[in-house]
Length: 132
Image 1 (cartoon, rainbow, N blue to C red):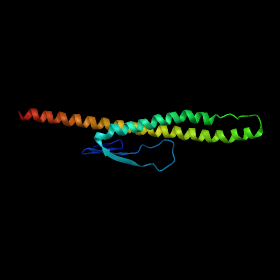
Image 2: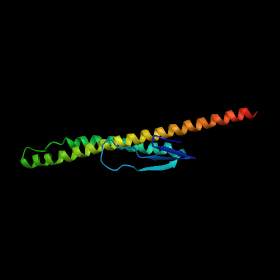
Image 3: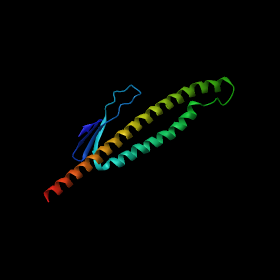
Image 4: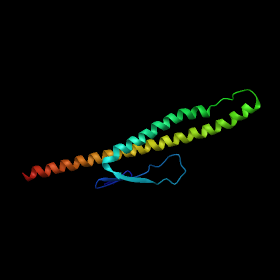
């Protein structure tokens, strides 16, 4: 069964990495895993998403740092620190979007696996009922 970047064969799922709308990069990657391990994989991605959200709060502090004093050295420090913080903040946003897209793709793959298993079970039940 194939669709939406998910290919199912036997008890394995192959999934391509979701495209990142931020542009840049060749993208492409992906992985194959056993269908019965998908919940653990989704959990790991959700944990990463939570870590990125915590990092985002720290990035906000870095992007909006204030000079410790009113002299030129403090002003120079602020001018150098804020762009770095803002770049980190932007990168964090892109990472969060990518992780969200991957979680969505994994969840869709899980749904397809569940639907396929349900359909197979229903077909087996029908076949069993017809044989009696």
